[in-house]
Amino acid sequence: MADISLHYSNSSTPRAGTFTFTAFSQILGTWRRRAHERRELATLDQRTIRDLGLSPSDIQFEANKPFWRL
Image 1 (tube, rainbow, N blue to C red):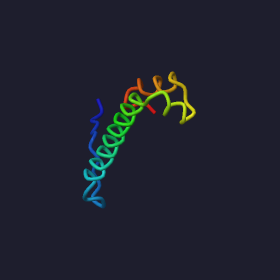
Image 2 (image 1 turned 120 degrees about the horizontal axis):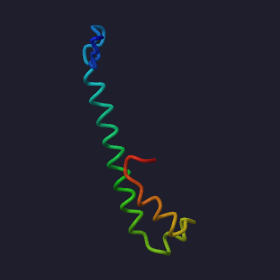
Image 3 (image 1 turned 60 degrees about the horizontal axis):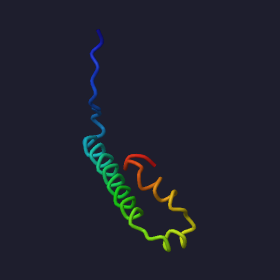
Image 4 (image 1 turned 30 degrees about the vertical axis):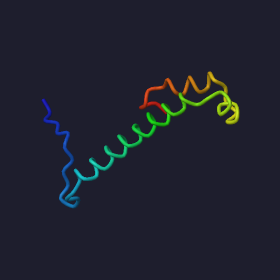
């Protein structure tokens, strides 16, 4: 059976783990921002929704999406 390693190792890149951490923190930041924006959408009043040119069902659809979905 083959020995598979999930760790990236390269002597020319001494801080490969830093890149992974940075990418992970960017993903978490994006998810957090989406969740916050969707909570804000859910609190908009009818006048604001109409001013944005959206329908209440558009707002409800977007606000009900999980944070990890676009």
